[in-house]
View 1: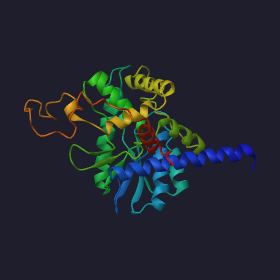
View 2: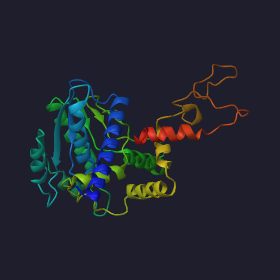
View 3: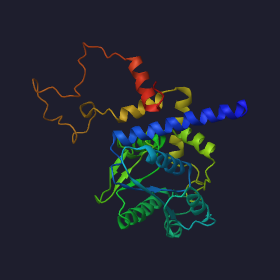
View 4: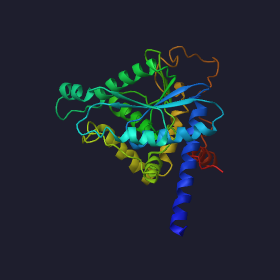
Length: 299
């Protein structure tokens, strides 16, 4: 083996190990998959869902619990959609799969004005169909391919445009209480997934409904986050960590914290503010260790 090929193989092995570590940590931290689960992996044909399926299939072989995996694709009847690609790929790796055919493309194009964002309606239609299919198939967990950057983009979209501190939770109970949605890639960086997908040479299928739209707010968030990541390495890891360390008494939501009932001499809250006479000290070693743990690069 040449030095170049050996180096490439080493890089791939490190990347694959990091992604598996990230996914394993997320599953463990949020108890995403339990013994006997039937996990439906929603496969869109994009890099994220291909990576999700690949990592889960590998973890399935060594996981301390037994669980079933089925891959499901929703064929939304987009013009020019290569219907043969996903079945051929899934058959080649021996994964049980289902292709659901629903013409949501025509619905979206009929309802949404030309040039307007189609993502909202498209995702609602897709979610309803997949939830219903999961119930029919006895699925216990629905796995989606959202990664850390998706979660952060959603967080800032809600701040800038929705007036809410809200993101995508790694694990979610649907509004009708009938389905549990999991996001095993929650700790994974998009740039790692992009590299992994390129290494694996997945048969990527572009989305002609939303992927070709310009000037979407999410694209602006993505550009902002990528700029920060390049200029301030570690910033995105710190922001994501903040989503896991919330102090309601230090915000302003009276529904989450009883500000009106605060009294002098009352019990000390767990997330009470640090007294002014005690300076807040930034522990750089702790921060670096925490970031390394999230990235799966800790020794």
